[in-house]
Length: 450
Image (cartoon, rainbow, N blue to C red):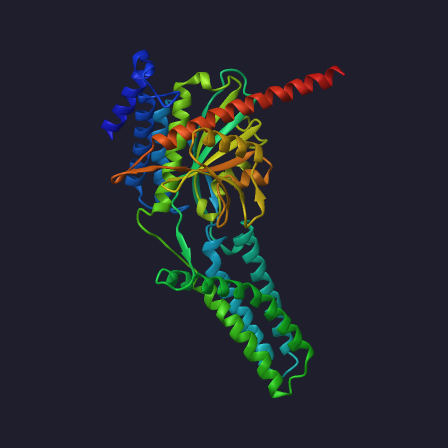
């Protein structure tokens, strides 16, 4: 640890050496810039993984990792960093799907009693079945699909942490650029069928069962209503009312209750996100070393968000804590570093499942910067889960998400290309935002003079 910190300190000392800065590589980047960036990213990733190889949201490992990140922020940037705790309900989301399966099983039990009992009280059981299944369906849609924390009385509270630091504007801040990433490690989530897919089971089977799970709820509601209206003396009718929804709902309940989460030590997914958070740190460090690239009316916020597993809860809590409540988010704009891995450079322009679009202007600036660097970037609509930029986009805060490409050199990743492309994109974004701010001020002046 001391050796790594000493190396970073030495780089701080040598950064102003004009002879070194004169040896330019790839445009505006010196050999020292690249060496420093690689050291920061590798040190950040290594030291946090030493604390906790797997960092699940709201876990003790996540807290210890947040402490280490704050320490690395302080030592690398030389400005104070802080941890901000926030409360989450880890089971109010995808982790709670087995609980929804149990609730659905209770609804099915009431339905079975309502069908089999010939006394007038059977309608009471059918009403209970309808109400419970409606509640379960709403919980599934609101908590797992829409990513909203409701029905919290069912789930325990846990504490997670965001880590952040601010590079103040030289003059009064007129706009803010947030460079964010997440440091927790996603868990792999799967139902039994998806888990078996790793054993060459076709993906369509899992999708079919998932669709059946959703369709079975309105089916059970419809059959409960039919059971309340039809006479039950006919055994054929009773058998039909019993067998079809029981089989249909039974398969769905099996799907929900076997939807589990499992971890893989040092998973590639967790490391890719952590490396992206380290990349954000390297870019902020570069901006501090080259202050002329930052407009004097802009403040930079570096943030590592926690508890992404609950659906970008860290970035959402960051907004709730600061937006329109203090001076941290003045005219905010967000570049989210989603991952760094050997998969190509991509700009994420939205969330497909939520039909959510990110800021097109910001995305275009980043995309064109990558294109100018001959990186062959692509646009992509995020298909599976939220990125940390989603809560900003919901509130119409300009935001975009990027995935950076790292190159393999033997066992290690080499970050020259990823760092240069990220730093270039951020610098061009700052230029764009500064020009936009000047245009707005000029427009306001013209309007006032009329």
